[in-house]
Image (cartoon, rainbow, N blue to C red; front, side, top):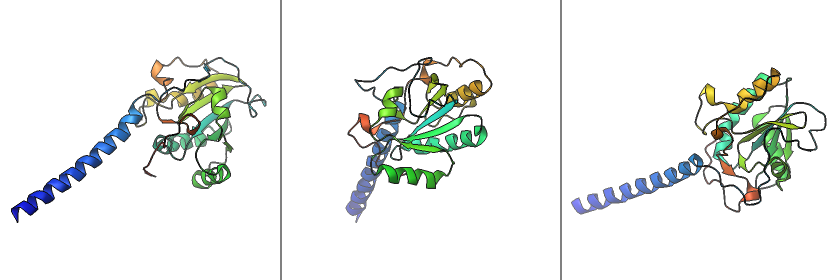
Length: 209
């Protein structure tokens, strides 16, 4: 009886340890910078870009989203809050690059989040490449056709400090006709999930939301 109990305890402990290791590895991936593609086009603040939706000379906030990325799913509430707060002052666009049927993903995004903004499919990664984006979630703010800000929403995916909400602080500066803020390098070092166009690996096997 004691041997059976001991074997059962060892079995359960092993299961728990394996689950803990899997979760730790999963979280560690998103605590380290996203691997940079070898063919990355360097695009920095002040660079001019030519995009199909940038020719109207409106200030534009571009949000890169991927359903299969847990970081994107966690970040969406912050993005929704920004859309509600600044709608009408800037043009918001969500760019989806994900695996699966493009049209289905666009409709799924609209139904799930219902923000009333333009949603664009970028299955081949052309918009992302033009802006030098290789990770989700990422934000790009255009002042006319010029990069005003490009980088992370905050210091890390679970960092909710007001002082490190880089994308929102940059957006507020744009709306107030101020110069683009100068942030520490961590604002521009991409964290999150590789875009599907840059990786053949699955970005996530867990569905938290």
